[in-house]
Length: 323
Image 1 (cartoon, rainbow, N blue to C red):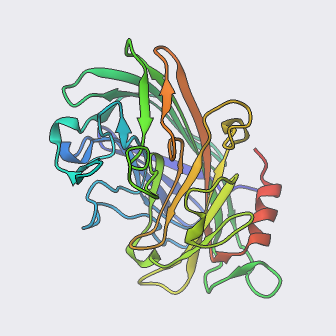
Image 2: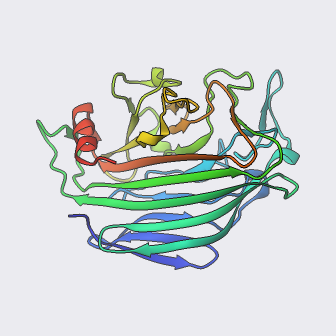
């Protein structure tokens, strides 16, 4: 049975979801606007394991606009809703503050928790740097499947000193183009930089997670950059506490990540150096065109587990927790 959850809402600032059995604040969903150059947008940080270890980073010195887990748009019809400098082919990254837009919080449709699930449903406006309204987003973040007492050791598929358990977060975004012309979603790779196809939902791991383990259904390591798969996992070791954590990033079936059903294909952006990061990019190699009035809908699940999970353990977990 999933452990009970509790919500605390600091109006105008953030929503915190607490796991009541251990009193652990699993996430803080922050929606108060921050620095304009960092492309203000809501984000999740800190995000914690059931053993109270943080598995996100916030405003690191290399990229101040990296904030936990957030929806991003690195290249959007000439605007940068990612933050910081903008990649320009042949000129590398340039400070172009007039291109940095925002995702503004408009309101919540639901903020609730029951015995085993918590929900944050939000309306947002995607905006050009000059404030022009470009898109509407309906976002839904759900926490669920909070499960204690993962047993580690031989045959368990889990290694590491900590045995706290796991929990999952489902992130849904439906983005509707409100312009009279198409919105073009791209990435540094679509603009000429190799192996930099980041855009969409983006996770930045703690500094200690550098050099962590990257695992997919059929492969392992940094060579999974730019590949396609229904899931990808990242394991890292904590600073300040003994043990490891594993995060599993998963496409919902309707995402049609391969593009076989006619939707735009998705590819994994993943790095373990010089920092830990994962994004199920929806515009890695080619731009995604969203016509006026059309909606881009994507749903993802992120599972946060104590210990280093191997492929067998991950596969078993996903089979036990179907969509």
